[in-house]
Length: 294
Length: 321
Image 1 (tube, rainbow over the protein chains, first blue to last red):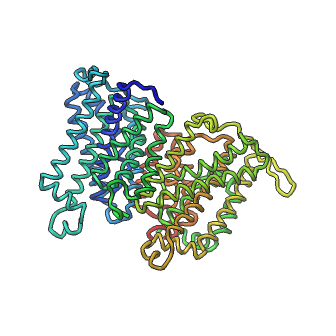
Image 2 (image 1 turned 180 degrees about the vertical axis):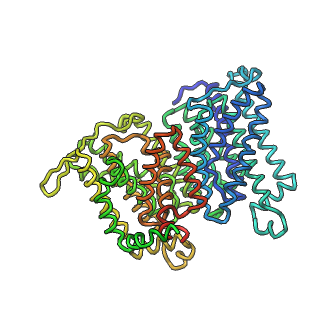
Image 3 (image 1 turned 90 degrees about the vertical axis):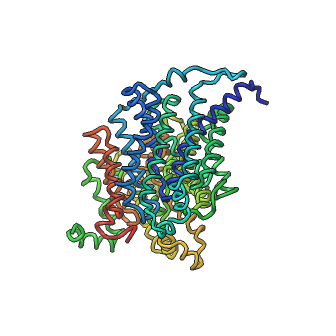
């Protein structure tokens, strides 16, 4: 049927893993924020875009990719804290549509703000020298930087898992997403937990942006493109489910990557078809609990 | 305080919505800052009216209304440019048909999930349509947009009128929009309209009252797509081109902003919002290139502090009242 060299196919699978990894980093933050606060953060993509721009500037300042990799998500995460504290907090208790609308306005403003600060033309970021070569995997050559992205994604996910499962704060977060009222009744200050979770989620979006910059370039509209893919991922995986975000994110990455290979024109459409099929077969998503936030 | 000053005026308008609409928009081209704006306000107001039926009255936030606007535009545009349809009415009908079928299909999928998923799903499906139109360049013109739409003369009862003059086109659109506004009023005043509001206020109670709320929501979705599709079809005639951006998420975002600025769940909010948005965008773009930044900030202020929008605040109606 398809006369395709195996190595090219494997390369495409790896590319899908990279793509999926970025989606997972985004979707997991989106899902975490939603699970705890029932806030759908439309500006999640805008923070991803901001992460890439901040990384561009920090790279110019520090000349160190490694410092940038750590600092840029922190900068973006801190901005996330401010947004929660100053804007989103005012909307708790109102319709869940309101935070979505607010962050939609925020993302519009951020896209234009970034154009004002950094210019309208897209920027390019080079991967660090140590990572700019290609590695011979025996059957194919693969850019080291992409393997590095997979590794960082995995490390960030393990760190998040350890934080949620092994620390007291993580315990409170998990309890809070199950039953916020009960956690409050036990005398815990959920406002600070929400602030923290929002910051973490936004920081992860920033990290995803930092990692994506050298692969996809840095431009103001990059955030909107990915937020729609992320929405598809959380619908397929089940909103509020972290396992769902990981599985669906990787699945979507592979689907896009392989369709790009076989039928490039369909690549942008196929994710939505998969979403429609999941909705027909399993409306609550692969890992979703029916009734959550409905 | 603001309400006090406009009290008698808004009270009269609220009691006689259709008459007010007919009178105001009959003279609107002569009081609008410039004439092209008048037609735009009519068409985008109709677009926002369609969105408002779903969000303002039924409580379903769609972030993908570009889909039905685009389907209406491409439907009418393709009928005229590719099928060489010789009747303006038939072209409009094809546009409406495309929007209604699209609305029914997307509505069916999106209503499988309730609550906040709805917004994400509508956005995703609209974006899918955008990519389809973008890649099917042979049919839709792709990135260049659909060109070559002839502006046929309007023929009715054997009389043929050219729509080339901007005022002629304005009044053509005016008649159709008045019919749409009257149609919306009829829907809202019917028992069906009451069920819509019941779903918005408390969907569990509506279920308990024995209403099949999924059918009602789907019907509301289809009506919304119908109004929106008419707006799209009219805009295709006005511009004689359908830019592919008609289907892009930013178009959906625009109508969300317009409706919330004007006042979601109010009868005139969509038109007030469309006028406000279009005038703001037009004036702001003279001063700063990054005018969407200003619009974004104003929109955030409205969501935070004026959730009823301009018209809702003046008349103390709308969502949350």
